[in-house]
Structures are given as structure tokens and as C-alpha cells.
Length: 291
Length: 135
Image (cartoon, rainbow over all chains, first blue to last red; front, top):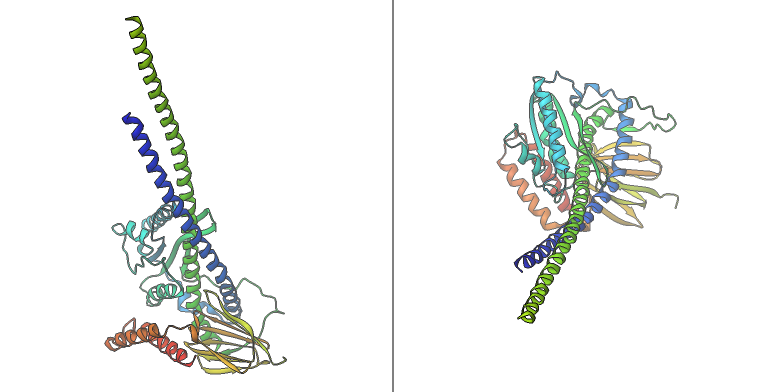
């Protein structure tokens, strides 16, 4: 009889786990929808921004700008953008692995690498394994452009002061709900902008620039960095919740399967118990009849 | 209707405003300037300050962050990293932010790496407070 009770308890326990995973799935789904909306809302800003940036880059030779300065890369910085929380499948693991590989590769080339973790998971992993600075953790719960501003304030002045020579951003590129892929993007020196892109001369407008176009470009480039960072933040946030949705969906399905097989076991055990009891009775009556 | 101007205020978070207005006043980095329909094409950077537009003789003010403005003959696009309408601003929060930033600023040396950053925060909070008071 004890076995029966045990199985019943197990079924109840798995049922509770299922409730939790289902709830987490729904929470992640709603957060994901919000993240998607934010990405949607960001698009006009980013689009317009690039338009103006390109039109400026066409007029001004930006190659002398400090953010575009190419130096022999000796000291590197890597931003590793993970989520703050786990339970989202391979989302962070894959990214951390990619970061680790990238760092190792650069270190074997004899370069000095410093890590800038954004998100708790990456910080926790690299805490003892890499040189860390300017960490930003527990930021994804509620973030907006000011976070991107803060991060850019950490990285821009120190690049201009030549404290490091190259900056890479490793983050999960968002493809769709269930597909995120780790991507390595070089932020500094900024790749040349807009030069290869020939804009339609009809569309080109000769603006009055205030202040002059050079100064304007100088002010806009840091904003461009923020646009890139902010986009990566949004993609990480959306990807995290998309990955969690998928992971929790899987977990819920596994719970269903487990409950199914446990119920089968339970029924079998119950049937066996009934059969055994019947055998006892039959055996008993037969013994009495014989006697 | 001929004097109307299409104004769009775009932030990374959302389209803060989009609609026809009569006049826009922009806090340009080289000084405040007003825009009416038919203005020459202009690209100007924006500093933290008060942006306002007039519609049906009513003035609406926004506290804006840094960014820039693209002015065309019949359309003004404002690209800023943040924009808040005067009646949406949390005054208590703004006042607190201002005091905090000023207190930090008082303790800092001018050549501190964070000096500019904190000063910007102070200016921002001050502007928000000023704009909120107006609305």
C-alpha cells in the first residue's frame, strides 16, 4: 500500500511544479510581448537616427573622430550582455561560452582583455575567471535609455583617454521568439558609417547645420553608440523572455508526460493490489471449503 | 490651415507626440529657436531643456533630453533620448533628483570624471521641475 501512496504524492508534486512552470511561461509571454512592443517603438527612432547620421557622414569626413581612431589593439574590452535571471534554457550558457571562447582567442594573441558584464548571470560566471570592471547587474527588471547612457558613459571617455584600444559587444542577437544567436560586434573603433551607402541625390537635403556639421557629428556619434547599446539591451531582454517562454513550455510538457507515466504506474499498482487482495480472498475461501 | 506644421517627437521608448501644430520652440544647443511653417531646412542639436509647441493658441511644454531636431518646410522631427510632457512629470521625484545631484556636485572636484555626468543630471532635474511648474 505504501507504494500507492508514494506515487500519489509524486503525482501531486509534479502537478504543482507544472503549475509553477505554466505560470512562469505566461509571465514570460507577457514580458516578451512588452519587449517586442518596445523594440517596435524603438524602430522609428533608430531609423530616423541612421538617416540623419548617414546624411551627416556623407558631408563630413569623420575618420579623424576619436571614436573612430584605430590603434594597434593591445588592450581590449568586452561587454558581455546576459540576463539577470536564469531558467531560460541555453540563453546565457551559449552566450557565456561564446564570450569565453572569444576572450581566450584574443588572449592567446597576446592581448589584454577586460570584461564589462551587463546582467547578473555573466558577472557571476566571470567573477573569478576574468578581469571585470564597470559591471551593471540587476538592470533588466526596469530599464530605459538612461541605462544605455550610463554604459556609454563608462566606455566612451576611457576609450578616448586611450585606456583601451578596442571594444567588443557580445550579446544574443534576436532572430525570433525561439531563436537567439550569440553575436560579437565591434563597437570601438566605430566602423566607418554611411560612406558606402549612396543616397539618392534627390532625397538629399542641404540643411543649415547648427552648430557646424563637424560639431554636430561629434555630438551625434556618442548618441549612435547609445542607439547600438540600447538596441542590444532590448534584444537581450526580448530574447531572454522568449527563451524562458520556450524553456517553460518544455518544462510544462515534461510535467504532463511525467504525470501520465506516473498515473499509469499508479493504476497498475492499484490493479495489482486489488488482484492480490482477490487472490487472498479466493485462496481463503478455497482453504475453508477444503477443510 | 496653411500655417500648420507637422511635429513629431520621437524617443527611443515611443513616439511622444505626433500631430499638427502652429509653432514649435526648440532648445537648440546654440540657443532657443522658434519654428513656423516654411522654415529653411535645418539640422540642430538639442540640449536638455524645454521644448514647447502651440496649437489652437494653447502652449504645451515638454522637458527634453539631448538629441537633435530636423526641420523641414512643413515638418519638424525631434529626436531626443527622453521627453516628458509637463503634466506627466513627477515633481517630487524631480525635486529629489535635483537635490541629490546638487549635493553630489557640491562635493565633487571639477575635474572628476563624473562631474559632467552629474551636472547633466542636475540640469535635467532642474528643467523637469521648471517645466512641471508651468504645466
